[in-house]
Image (cartoon, rainbow, N blue to C red; front, side):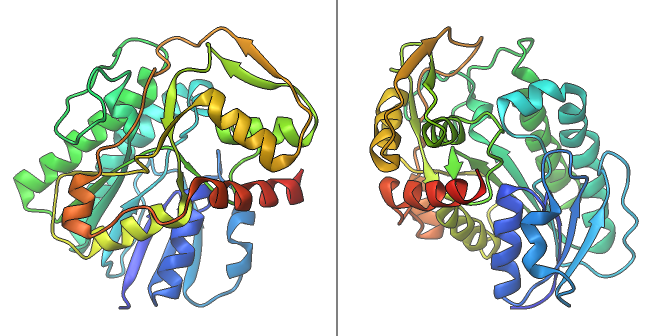
Length: 311
């Protein structure tokens, strides 16, 4: 394959796995991160590798790259609720100003542009499962809006560059993803449950536990990303696992897989927390011939083993 990819958020959970795949596919990766939520430790295995160049930079300010680029892939952003609620302005700016600067960079360098968006653009959805043509149900002034609305704006900006300049673009909406290298303390439900279980602490469920989620393993997500790179389709594509389960069921699976004696404790539900979340992946199946291949228990087993090693 070959060529050069500038990847922002490369030191994060998804970005580091994407870097691995791109290098294996013979791409050169310019890995950009400000490490506000990621860590270069996630790319330590590529230290001094000729195909990986690391740049510490916050893409809120323009990045000076004069060499030819084949892709600009924008994966930089706090993504877990505790992180983006702690960094509200940075989250808004990396998805607004950062997206604009990177789109301009792609346009100047003649590169294609790839935006990592999120299922959070659907908000607390009234349509279930969520298709890409669903406009969403988002509280645009609530605390979670700093992420939800930022990603909706980033999508609009990306499509505006496509319509005005003919820029070749791709957009994915990522549903809940887990796997090795997740920040153990990032506050997402999978890491929360695993970390608590391994420490023998109560598993914290917000609400009654009947809210639903769909969880995909990171390798499946990366495969979908790579397949979309090869398809000329400029509109959003859901990448997620349509297998739906309640948060309470997830907690019980993690109890079983970790062998913990931890009990479950219930706490009040945060504002605007979605009650249900499941992707319709018909478009990905049709356009990319993609569907998740790693079952929940296998993926959670890998995630648990990684967190157990790092706890």
